[in-house]
Length: 634
Image (cartoon, rainbow, N blue to C red; front, side, top):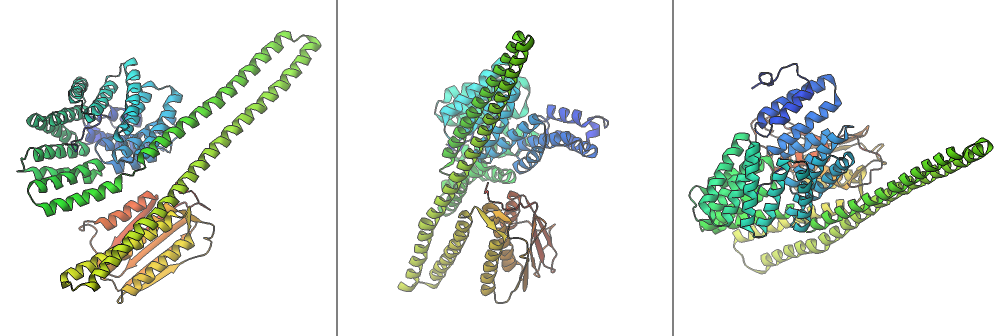
């Protein structure tokens, strides 16, 4: 039952709005109705962005991009939402920057990147507290509570939710109160207090209906259905899930649609009603993969496994279960809770230290002003001149103290940053040692055991070939593990080191492919002082590795050329083959090309693929603005 998930509350534009309206009005209008008509809101915001770009209005450009990011987030397109709100950070408006941080936090929370989510929420909270924006402070408290709730740190979650509730009630924010009750209800439900959870969910639903917020109504309806499921009232649960699905479809929310399909499939499997259930799972997986929703992909894989197990198709059930285990391992780290707690402690400690130093400076300034006033009252004649000189000397002393306090603050910030980097490096080295000593040794033992089986026993040819395939796959895994350890053991990777690594890989590929000619061209001038972070270096290496492997496996190429070029702070890598090529309009990209694009996006790079049938393929990676002596792997 644990895989039923509660949902967290968080025509041409000229036919709707006059073409002469400003970008400001278009933005405000779109955000007033985007919850109930997100597709229309996207059209209005795109027009606002176009007007802002024509006028080179940087503030409105950032505002339009962030608003687009918020709408795409609600529609479940998290990759596009993250890209737009990250671009919106390029603004001097602190409130707009806080909104972008908040949206980036929500996206990372939905993608199960909880440490990144918390970092961005805390950045937003700093700005809102400085501006004394009560509603935004409460919303951010509520969001931080969700991060702790997802990681089963319920005492901290409730602490932040109650902080948010107190502020929302003081300003009579009904929407905020609804979200708080919804999130607290989820904690009660997860703790088994279902009747109490149901009451809170229904209260939240009443508020959303009064506000006529379609997305909020859909989410509350879904949550009520989930409680009925846990109460074993299957038919009632299905009724609510279908209502939620209908509303989510009407507003085009892919995340909500995926969750509703998963919930209905899970209920039907538990009830033994398997007829037509797989269609629901297929739909859930389709929408979850399109929007990259981690929890819904995990839920769909679990539903597949349970469905085939219920049909006594154990082999297929086991296959999906293995895929589920691999997917979970890729998402969740045993250190997640520790990281979140560490970030919270670092943030609170740094914040208190800065507040103390600021208070000291304020007190010094106040003392200075008070002494100045006393000097004016006593200042007559020569005595006034003498007191004035003493006041000036005292003022200079206080200014010197303030400068010293400021330098102390800067020094503490630098020490905190250095300590954090040292801890990250220690963790990286410890993890690389564990990978080498434990996983590497285990994989080597597997290869040895397989070889003993092949040579120690008279095995059927089919089984012998299978063992050989497993041995080769394990050997490949060891090579990839070594590459990963190589990157983890470095704070920074020089371009020469990366070129050497690529050259070694090409030499191995050349030996394994008799009918393929390899050409490797590099320029090694003026690169001694330029380095990549370990993340950048590993991703560049993997992209080149994937491009060469694709050419060998699928292109039937006779010649593969690799160009490695660095010039004017720009790294350009090309992998060109003379193979059979493919039609970019017709072909559906597989995991290999999609992984290359994702890796390029992660290092703020650009990848361009050009291919024509029977005329080969060219894959080009560009990374702009490389900095000299880069050493921080952040």
